[in-house]
Amino acid sequence: MLLGDIPKRNAAFYPTKTAVVEGPVKLDFREFNRRINRLANAISGLPCRKGDRVAVLAHNCFQYVELYFACAKAGTPIVPLNYRLSGRELTYILNHSEARALFFGQKYLPVIEEIRRDLECVAHLVCIDAVPAGIPHYESLLKMASDAEPEVPLSEEDVAILGYTGGTTGLPKGVMTTHRNVISSCYNCAVEMRLHPETVYLNAPPLFHAGDAMGMFAFSFAGGTNVVVDSFDPERVLRVIEGQRVTHPLLVPAMILALLRYPDVKKFDLSSLQTIIYGTAPMPFEPLLQALRVFGCGFAQIYGATETFVPISILKPEDHLVDGPEHLMKRMLSAGRSMIGVEVRIVGDDGKELPPGQIGEIAVRGANVMKGYWKQPELTEEVLKDGWYHTGDMGRTDELQYIYIVDRKKDMIISGGENIYPKEVEDVLFMHPAVADAAVIGVPDEQWGEAVKALVIRKPGMEVTEEELIDHCKRHLASYKKPKSVEFVSELPRSTAGKVLKNVLREKYWQGRERRV
Image 1 (cartoon, helix red, strand yellow):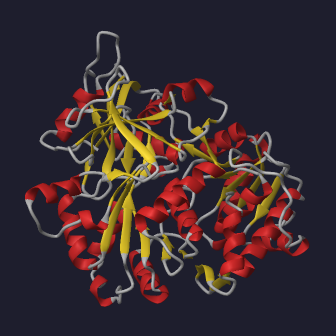
Image 2 (cartoon, rainbow, N blue to C red; image 1 turned 90 degrees about the vertical axis):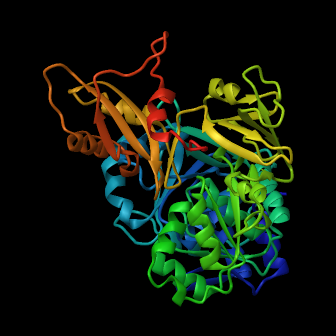
Image 3 (cartoon, one colour; image 1 turned 180 degrees about the horizontal axis):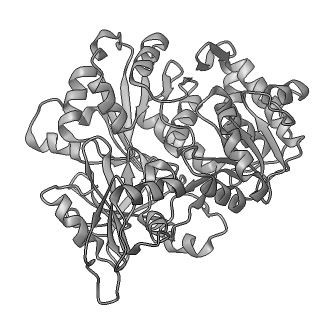
């Protein structure tokens, strides 16, 4: 099965059922599939040939959902761009992916004009929601194209999505996700979460994230409805859940905390909610109990990665208890058990599987595991070994195979659902003339899960303040990557090989916590 078969099948099975909603826009599956076909044929007519990459820089919108499916039908892998990135970061991804076309929202026109002369391969610009001078408009392209099913020869092993994730080398990695990978995740989620055509999914996190894109595909796969909001705002999300009778919203822990703090949360009719899906970071235990009481519905935690098109394991609604025996309550600290269709094992440094209770690296095997990293075969070989994807997450299992994530083998920080790689922040810190040495770590944060903290050694005779370094990072990086705090130190602990011992640095802040993520 291919991704383009999803809207085609739904158009045949449920032609008048609502496929996607955004504000006043409501499309049934018949019209949705016709628009997707027009868009796919328009992309081919730019021309973008099979295999050419098509990038998207936009907030959530119904057109973004159409682009995911249209690019799949046209055989042109979609490159979803993080709109929080700086012009410098966007330029790297667009050039590294060799994107041929760029679809964008009007608000991003200034940054596109800023970087346009540095783009090496982008030959076509298309504005989604406006008509800038000299740039084609999305709806105009659709009007001129045929709504017939595209005739592009495709296979399940063709790349459908080239999603970029942070890299330990300081540069993002392009994850090659095939049609087979996505369909596999759809099957797994549909079975584990018992999805059906009456489900209504809320796309609240950004659609450039693999997590929300996976949810969008899975609920479409089941014939469900996708409701789209362009950004997260507690009141708006509550109104949309009430008005559209949402059954399954996807929310990162920081969003759930924001909803709990919203003073009028109990005034909304949230009776349609069946399951709140959450992930990207562990949910603090006490707020999770509060959320179970306030929302009165099921909760499901999804643990995964971009490299696995997200779902590795699931902590199901029946595992979420407001009260119960201690051994069952403790399971809410876990990431659940492996998804159907996904194998998980805990391995030692020698690659051999460890017994329950012992901590090792989490390795994953399944049809959802990526094809590899775009143009980075060495990195691919590092993480894909004998058919197993090595996640870089450290964990253990109990006797019933519940997975407990205890730390990260890699240095990645997850703050508010965003992956942040310390090396990238460190590289920018070293650009400042007053910085002699620096190390970046994640420290506990009640709202965001983790916060970025920089430990800096000043050059002799030079002065720089915390505020100056934070502003420096903000100028060169997406704002969410900048340090929340800077601590000036006289030395950094190092191994005999000269490597900064970040586990030693983190110990001070994570002491006494069972989970260090």
